[in-house]
Image 1 (cartoon, helix red, strand yellow):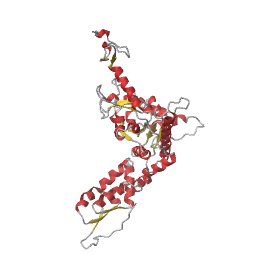
Image 2: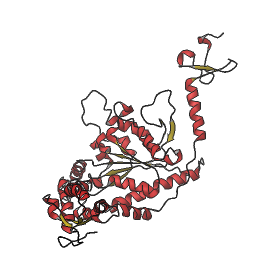
Image 3: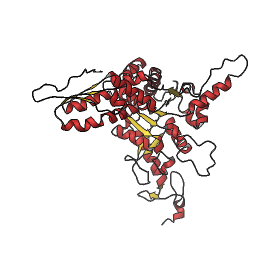
Image 4: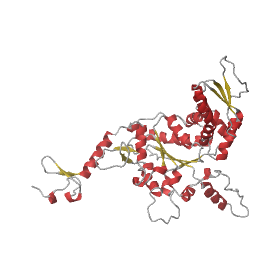
Length: 425
């Protein structure tokens, strides 16, 4: 009978003392350790991995036209995103056709960084792209991630969400889109004197590097932390498009400072880079500016496509309220029509909502909040009062929280009040 000191793995040569477990062959003449078993399992899973199918890809102008149906304004951002996404999936199709041929050029992946104020449409832009291309989409918040899942979610948990979105179709998940929001919140703390590791800032950036670049990651199908006896799913991130977004508050100050420093001398023309010009200089952000903000150079290098979004002005907010098929005003009209009442918005009310959102500096995200507040009282009473036939929202309702104008139907079918109704949209 063999002693423990005489038993070695036939594959890697490690002894019984160096591994957790050795498994003997039926005749007892050879052994394999637990580490080599895991490696063999990964090799077999790679061979069984379903091949990605070639995607049907619209050209950039078609992508831009589709985005116009969902998003108001941001033309330059939509053009840049259409080109970047087209190039990414063109690369995926090219690499599938190229296969293992080494005589062709290998195309690298270009992930995208969206920079824009809150409520400018970053999340909607990423979500709409996934809808246009018909690929799985996962939306995660960078503030919930910590390095190796110390307190919050593990970085690899974002891949589990994409798998769930693809209904565990691995080949579809491996060509999906992951949008990581609030990426500016994981910037490393400048001049930090803290002796403990920054597990939620720079540590998360370090943990994201390989996933952004492209690697085969093993993730638990139901999320949570991994443990040795758990069955994991291997997912290749090489063809997953990562879109990171953030408001990057005060980045414009860094860009403005750099541009002012360059304009030195008697004959130089100063650009008058005023810090008060919000987001005027964000589109000119260079990699060095992002590094100075707090992103590590390796992380910036894996997000080569930087797209800046504009702050929404009053005209854009008015269009958002009235033009899209699923606009907020139409949603409220539909809600009240279910209770048998017609809802109308005067032009002055729509303008007041847009102006109030600009004052609150909430962008498009604040439009629903303003309307919810103005509509609260009538949404409370309308379902129980079946005599209400028409409801009119004017400027006074938005600015001074006045009650909406209500027209009721009498038993004889004659309206109790008549008032000029201005229907917008």
